[in-house]
Length: 116
Ligand SMILES: [Zn+2]
Image (cartoon, rainbow, N blue to C red; front, side, top):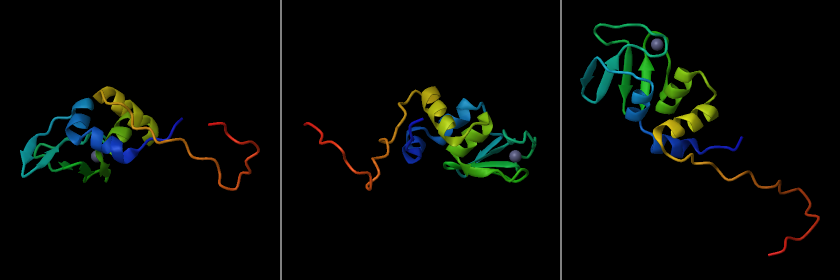
């Protein structure tokens, strides 16, 4: 699998999109912080003090899960980060920002010249 530029993925798909992809609705929305039930450990919270989303980060006070919106998506779908990033881009309708394949090792001797 080709490597992906996770930084770009996080810029191309924002937290709002991730929340809508995983079907999460906040119970409270105040001071740029969304609060509600945890989509990972499924703890319910009437006062919304369990799971918090601020900017592009999240934190659950019960299961202690935290990280970026990409981490949230990966944990929610239960896939490794790379797979989750590719899937997330697909679902959000953006093209996956693949990194160029790693260059040949510098100490690898070149046996033939490339024709231009
Ligand atoms: Zn949790």
